[in-house]
Structures are given as C-alpha cells and as structure tokens.
Image (cartoon, rainbow over all chains, first blue to last red; front, side):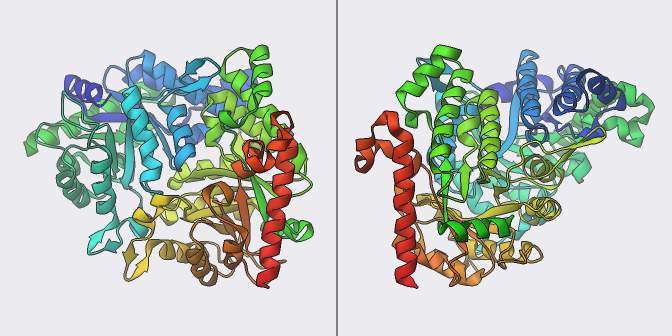
Length: 311
Length: 311
C-alpha cells in the first residue's frame, strides 16, 4: 500500500491529502436543511448532511489528489449514524480510486490493539468467514503505550498490505508539553521517531523504498521536520497543519527526500471549507465543491513550486 | 459523576469495575451458534452474540459492582453492527444502575478532541436540538498531545457532570519504553500525573473530594502506584491489569487513600471469561454468567480483605 501511495503521488505530482473533517459548521445550509427535511433533526439527519457534503468534496477532488484522510471523530460525534457515514465515505472514496487514511489515532495494547488493527485494516473471523469491517488503507496510531500498542498493527500491515502513521510530533501548540521533553539530552519525539523506524524496518516497500510504518509530524514545526526527515530516511511522513494551522509550502520542503517523496501534506478545512474563506468567497456556499477543487489546485501548486525551488 | 461513583463504591463496599471486553473467543459456542442461525455468519450475527453475552454478564453482576468498562475496540472490530451493540450495552448498563466507563482511549486536539468529548460525554447540536450520542459517564483519554487534547474533555466534564481517566502508566510490559523515561530526573509518567492533577484541579466533587479528571495506572506496577497515589491525592485512579495481567489485591492497597477510596480496580477476562478458568470450570460454558458472578464476588472479597489487612 505504501508503494501504491508513492506511485499515485508521483503520477499526480501531488503529495497532498484532503482531510474529510466535516464539522457541522462547515456544511452549507442548503445541505443541512434538505437532510433535516428528510430525516428530521436527528443524528440520521446530521449524518446524511455530512454524507452529501463529503460526496460533493470527493467528486470535486478525486482526480487531483492521491488520498483522503477522514477524521473519525467528526463522524463518531454523531453516534452510530455518523459512524455508518464514515464507513460509507471510506467505501465511496475507494470506489473513486482514492487511498484512504483513517485518522483514528487509536492506541491500546495486546488483544485490544489487535482488535483495532483487525477492525480497521485487517479482517475478523466471523464463524467460518473472514470479513474486513472498516477496511481503510492506512490508519493513524498513538505511540504512548509503546511497542505493545504498535506490533499488532504492524502484523496486520504485513499480512494485509496496509500501512499506519504513528504520532511522533503533533501540530498543536501544546504538543511540546510531553513530546519535546528531553530524555538523555534528546526530545521524546526523537525517541519515538527512532522506534517508528525500528517498528517499520521489515516492512519496506520494494518499489520506492519506504516503510508501511510511517510517522505524523506537524507542519507547524518545520525545524523538527528537518531533523526527523534525516533521522528516519525510509519513513513516510504524514504532515498535518497546512493552511488553517499555519503551515505553508515553503516551510515543508525539508519533510521531503531528494526523490520528491517521503511526505504527504494534509489540509482539511483549508480545502473542504474553502468557500468560507475570502479567497474563495466568489464561489458561494452553493458551490462549496468548486471552491474545494480550486483550493486543492492552489495547494498542490504551492507545494510543487516550493519543491521545485528547493530542488 | 465522580461523587456518584464514590458513593456507589462505598455503598457496595466494592471498588471494582467489570471490563466488558467481549473477544469472540470468550463467547460461549451456544450463543454464537444461535446468533449465526438468526443473522448468518455476518458482522450482525457476531454483534448479536456479543450482545447476548454482555446481557448475561451484566444481569449477573449488576447488583455487586458500581461500574462497568466496555472496551470499545472489541465492538469497533465488528464494524458498524459492533458499534451499535456498544451503544446498546452502554444504555442497558445505565438502565441497570451501573456507571459506564467507556474505555475508548481517544486522544486528539482542538476541534477534534471537542468532537470526541461531545460525542461520548456531551451533547451535539443537531439543527435546533441537542442530542447526547453515546452518553457514557466516563471515558479514558490519551495524554500524548498535551493540554490541547484534554481541555475539551475537561470542559464537557464540567458542563455535563461527567468524568475522564487519563492514561498515566499503563499495565503492559512495554509501557516503560516512553512512560518511564527520565526527564530532569523524573519519569514521564510523573510529569503526566502532575498535569492530570492540574487539569482536574477545578473539577473536585464536593462530597468526597475527588476530581472528575482521574488517571489510569496499571495494577502491574504497584510501586509506581504508591508514588502516584501520594503525588495526586485528589485524583481517582482506574487500575487495569488485575487478574489475567498479574495484579492481586494485596499489591493494590497503595493505590487507595485512607478513606478507602481513590481507586477502582478493573478485571475483564478474569470475570467475563471466568468459566474458562479451572477455578470456575464447574459452572460450565452454559453458565458463563454464574461463573462471572462468582469471580466478581471473589475479586471483591480479595480486595476488601487486602484493604482491611492494610488498614
């Protein structure tokens, strides 16, 4: 799967992933009203509005980018109907040829981690059958519990040719509270990065040379990105925090290797809620999908230009 | 909610929580067969077997213990039908008067953490209505992302009178890889514990004096439990790892304060899969519920005896 991701990035010239984080505030009024007319002011109604919104965004960007990253929290907050739309979104994106990175940030141990891994990336035994319940291509994973929390995911990645991205340095302001603390003179995120390399050492894709065990390193800390890039040369980096959180293309060139690969940059609200920004206001709420397409094109161009200037 | 939990523990004399972690391997054959006959070998069938199993366990222990802790991974691995049974289990346990600790270990930032907090503990705005989608009483939360990941949960705890347990020192063998590393001479888990106290400082329950922001500290590290107990006197500790993972009542006395409160000990497979142990084999698979009741009684007696001998 990591080879497939690299191949799509190369082909499209777009190391970009669109974050499908449909907060209700981002969903145009006409979609919400239509859904509530049909299902009432219920979780089903809210979930239907999310689904129609996602469908519009996915149709508008699916030929531009290699991957999407649905943030499961935005679906989970709408209970079971929301989670059903998460699954529907995963399936629809895969039908459209997109690679799906489930941003689930699960983290647990032993049989519990194995259950998350089987449920999201692998298959579960149901009587005499094997069923793939969620079937994302990648998921994000939290490292706080150590190897016991990662090994079950790595095993499923190997068996089912899937991948994970482990949180190393997150994009938020307080990420330093624990992640930056010095241990034997080195910040915790470096130790985590070192383990990420080790966990993924026997899962290197033959075609492009990157591991199925990747890392999350926020766009908001470019100097840290530079250090981690060198420390983990075969680790693919998922970079959140572009746009709304402050990251720009020029800040991100050091997250990439000289092969032009090694990183994929996420933007969520910067693309899906582009119609709410002044720069894309001309599209209007009704044409949120066209605004998203233009924002994706602009982001791809920004990153491409930065990489060309750096190379 | 933390006052309610303390009150129930006092009344029952049982600082014990039953972990509802229904791995398929724990579910007696007759329940699986009946469910597959009705729904086929599908995720719906597997979820129905989980539901019948849970109902048996809950009915058998609901007058003995104050709380249950469903591990959402075991439901999530069965996709949407599994998650629907998670919700059904939460609702059923609350009907039976049990406090529900959702073991979800979510951890994210900003609006995403707010979405998890609203979805699990709080309410979401749906048109003109406020709906509580999952409505557990407590959930577990991962601290790796720092204050940005905890504050949204603490806010919902305040507004909706709910609670959280933040992972401080987990019970698994590799928990030390990051959690035990020394920072300025102190292990990371102590720094996290210090923050847990701070995050919960203005959420102290008036009746028993404990905070709605609790901590998870594994039973398998009793010396660490002793240190953290002193460091965080008003923090309630959720203690996993009793039984199957190796913890015993005598090891756990230092997780409690002199008021006999301050900790609640979880056992999952030790209770729900008791019928598979030699000690409870006499009940037989058909009477898995009676075996669970006896195992719960024995665990309560073990901890009560240990606390009496210590006090």
